[in-house]
Length: 168
Image 1: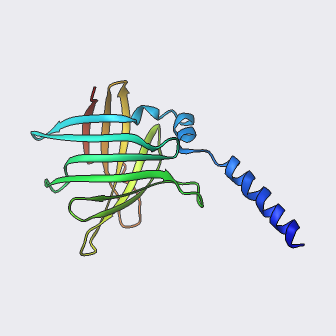
Image 2 (image 1 turned 180 degrees about the horizontal axis):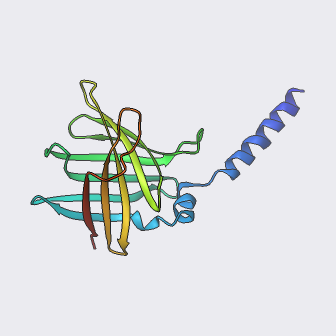
Image 3 (image 1 turned 90 degrees about the horizontal axis):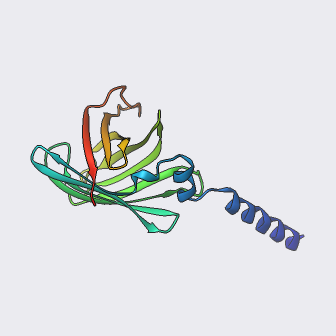
């Protein structure tokens, strides 16, 4: 009986591993591979850089941000984006130079990829926001920054829009 249970468990686990798409497959299926690369913008005289690169081929993307936060302070952050194998959700976890930890999830908002994220400071203060990524063309995108209320609802209209250019 124990041997049958072991074989059954192995077959189920193998099927589950095959059934779940990789992050690369999900990105390609949803047509958002264009987000990969390095993007730059000038905001109030300051350069903002945002990059998305494969950290572990097909499974983990590294995000690097350098610029100003919403309070106008210089900040740099690193995050990893991957599929949670338990839920199948695309999740992001990162840290910044101000000691904040951010966790978030990716999903669609209309035809845009949207990151919902909550940052927790060293003293436990939480701040949530959402960032939409609208493709303008091959070399330009627009970041749309949205408020997220206490219940997790994203506002209907963006608070700020930033046009970014692909860095060559």
